[in-house]
Amino acid sequence: MGDNRDNSADSRFWGFLDRRLIMGRAMIIHFSWATDPKSPEIEISNPLSIPEWFAYNIWHFPQRVRWNRLAKIIT
Image 1 (cartoon, rainbow, N blue to C red):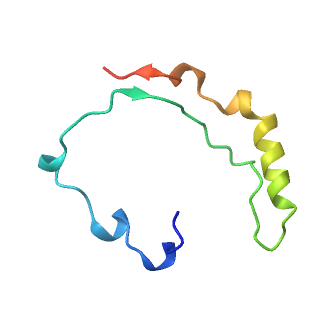
Image 2: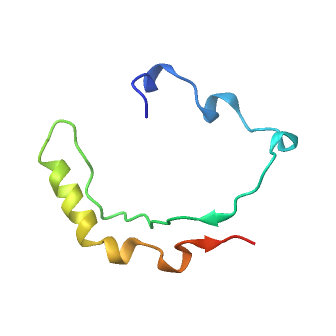
């Protein structure tokens, strides 16, 4: 996110892209990461939440990577 995220418009503001304007297709899934509802939240008011979040995600990295999708060619 940029520094102006609170004052800028994204796709939720613009709406959907007209399908005729799409010129290409996806070719490969480079990396896929599963969400984890148990992952701790980063709290701005608590700086110690950042290393806690980082440690949790490093520890659970092998379980969260979708290995079957890693570098998958899309047909």
